[in-house]
Length: 143
Image (cartoon, rainbow, N blue to C red; front, side, top):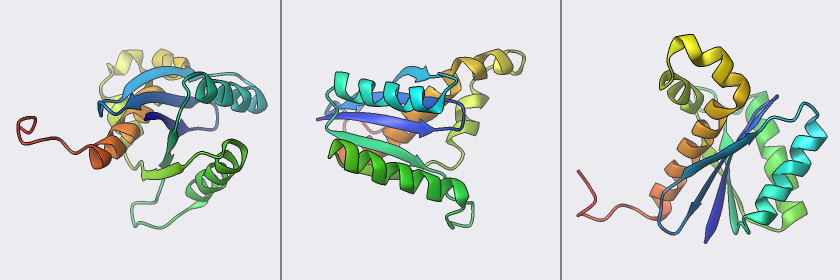
């Protein structure tokens, strides 16, 4: 099984890859200025990586409600399902961007943000959450 993790943003799409080993790794983010070009690049990555399933961040509000961004992710998931015929899993992504950004020195965050590194780190966290549910660690792997 091959999985692509997706952190959907207004300007960038963070990406990650994982398989049955249960480990998510970041891929280069899609940073094209044009939304249509980003979408086309996403489909290319999904096809080139021969993904079997997609894992999309679902930005729920802190009170578990679905705001405009969560609804946008739901619509995007439905489009991906229809276009690719692949399962798309929505995974709660609250605080993943904050967690990804906090691992970078404050003085470098502005330049790093534009590169998409933070977005792909967030996609990796989203994907890893999903992989941990699908492939739970064995007793030997637990701390």
